[in-house]
Length: 228
Image (cartoon, rainbow, N blue to C red; front, side):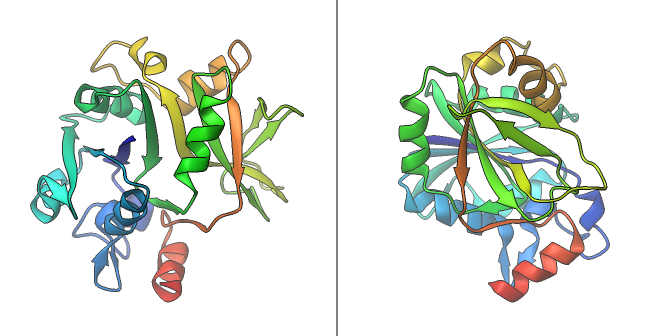
């Protein structure tokens, strides 16, 4: 399998506690957070991993080089911010496979990637989105599905929140979904693909209860340091 890690964000909300490195390199008890993501991918024998970078990209490259524990690494560097969709589209230039895993570089979600791939290939779809049930969706917004695991609705963030399923930031997709957009064009994967196309295409939801944490805010960053 082949993966893209989106590691080009500015990490604005985390900058009060992590300011000298990009967010995916935030130290977790002496190790960059990105190593935790790579370790989990390597456990599922990924053949190639592309790091989509931008802000402070040279610090990521200096630490990892061209491979990590035997897994080849490539870099897709954004000279200017392209958004989540534009970053994925740019990273495709380094990919060889038609079906690719994409994950956020600030979220540790320890799913079973073999099960995700089997789920994706058993459905007539170009996209499977990994969802996670959480006790309060207020920070994320929520995703609803129908009885056949198809995505039925996206609900924006609200103060009300409550129990529900959220977008866990991991996707398995066919590259044609991104190649409809010109290379180098900034766009949002969430707004311009997920929310615009789920009514006209069949996008499926793979729900996992595996360990999940998003280090985008200082409270959760500190919690991960304690839990690790």
